[in-house]
Length: 401
Ligand SMILES: Cc1cc2nc3c(=O)[nH]c(=O)nc-3n(C[C@H](O)[C@H](O)[C@H](O)COP(=O)(O)OP(=O)(O)OC[C@H]3O[C@@H](n4cnc5c(N)ncnc54)[C@H](O)[C@@H]3O)c2cc1C
Image (tube, rainbow, N blue to C red):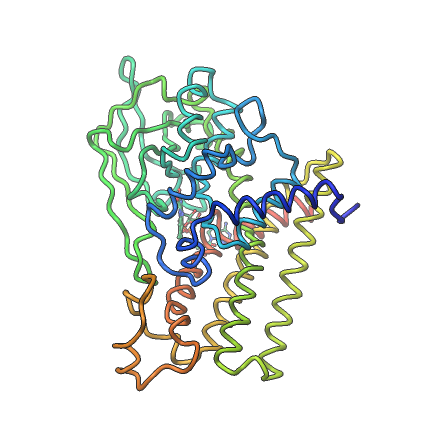
């Protein structure tokens, strides 16, 4: 196993770093570095910039218009973007549904859908979970009935991330009740502007509307939007989930946030407290260990071994680390991290009114203001993409045997 980067890989890293520095708008990286609210335009704007360069589909092979990068190059690209303060690539299009369309879609579907994903013009949402069908995904009830040349879809999806911006949605729908639940599921692409689709935002603990309920009331979907074969959707869904879990580990973001934690701890005067520094050091060790694990996966991929069965392990460790740095940021700022002030997530907020109400913020507190929001937001990480309890079951079965 070789964990060192070659001179060519280092040169690749430098090339990406220089390009990102030149093209990432400064107001967007400021928001990312300070966990401020990102608008749709911020997220899609960066996606379009990457799309123009041909890097939004950074994991795609050349035959589908991607850069054809190796696993190591993909990792270095993601790391440079995260460290520079680029918004996370919204994965539903380029990282999740695109590989499914490439592997199981027909030529017509590939021609129709992949260009809009690669350019960042079309926003995709993930329609897997339903009330009562999260961990037990195979029990989905949203029904798609074939009527002539189209399907009629009725039912409900939930927790649809950023679905309020969605143009298209990939859905697991029930097309049969025969046999095992897994065998009656199909994978259907649905235009979210179709009559009968209602998107209702859900306000979360952090006060933001990151997820939605999506209702389907007799929505007509052309049969040509079915991916692969009817009732084979479970196979395609599993293909996609392995991409989701590796992506959620997000070790690059944790490296960036570790630096933010140190900035906050210094500003609040707790960086010199040995006990607090111990906590930061322990976190740093775990982040480095996770990074090593990711590099081991890359090294295995380089030598042609398939190691996707540890995707669950990466998800568990990555999500726990994300929650730990959010907790330490809260601890560092103490009571000043607590108030949830909606405006505090806007770039340019100065904190005057709140500072007055609380008797004044200490040195770094304006930058700390969205901490409560970050803390609450990251509660989700151990739940979404398959809860950590369920991941542990999978790791126990597939890795430990
Ligand atoms: C912020 C956020 C964004 C999301 N975005 C999307 C999205 O865009 N699209 C989408 O389709 N879904 C999305 N999800 C849904 C997510 O995938 C589910 O929440 C997740 O799979 C868990 O399902 P559930 O919420 O129904 O919980 P449940 O399955 O009801 O689980 C409840 C609890 O029981 C535990 N549990 C369940 N089964 C077992 C078991 N067999 N062994 C041990 N413990 C078990 C779970 O770990 C959990 O603690 C999102 C969720 C969140 C929180």
